[in-house]
Length: 147
Length: 116
Image 1: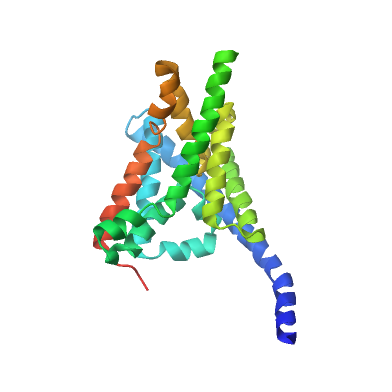
Image 2: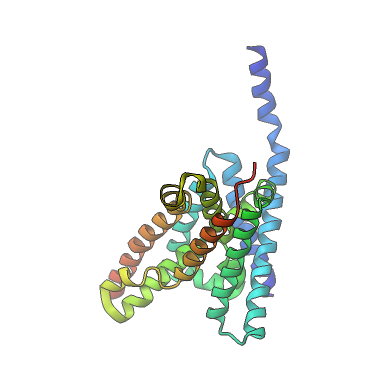
C-alpha cells in the first residue's frame, strides 16, 4: 500500500522533466523534417524541372519510401521511441504504421495477415479524413451555391 | 524565409501533438485522426492554403495536409462536375501517397521479417 502511494507520488513528479524534453525533441525533429521537405521540394523543382505540385508528390513519396524502408530495416521504431510525435505526425508516421503492420502480420498469410491488417492503424486516418472532408466539403459546396 | 516557416509550422504541429500525447490518455492513432480532421477543417475556408504558401514543405508534410488534400481535391472536382465531385475527387490528390505507401509496405513485407 505504502509502495503504491510512493509510486503514485513519483509518477506525479517524475514525468515533468521527461515531458519537457519529449516536447522539445518532437518540436526540433518535426521542424527539421519540415525544412528537409521544403529543401527537397525546391530541389526537385530545380533538378528535374517539375512544377511545384508535381514536386510535392515526389517529395511525399520520398518520405514515404524512406519511412517504409527504415521500418522494414527495423530501426525506425527506435527513432520513433526517441522522437515520438516528431516522426508520427508527419507523413512518415502514416507509412510507418502501414509497413510495420504488414511486416508484423505477414506470418498469418498474405490475405488474412498482410491484406486485412495493412490498414489496421492507417485506416482510422483515412476513415476520419474522408468523412470529415466529405462533411466540410458539403458545407462549403452548399455555402458556395447559397452565397 | 520559407524555411523558417516550414520549421516553425511542422515543429509546432508536432509539439502540440506531443503535448496532447504526454498529458492525456489519447494514443498516436487518436491524435493523427484528430489532426486529419483539423486539416480538413482548416482547408474548408482556405486557411490551410495560406500555410502552404508561406511554410511550403513544412505544411505539406504533417498529416494535417492529408485532410487538406482530401477536401481540396473534392472541392476542385465539384467545380467541374457539381455535387457528385465530392465523391469523385476525394482521392485525387492523396491517391499517389496512399498508393505509394501500400506498394512499398507490401513489397517490404515480402522481403523483411519482423525484428525481435
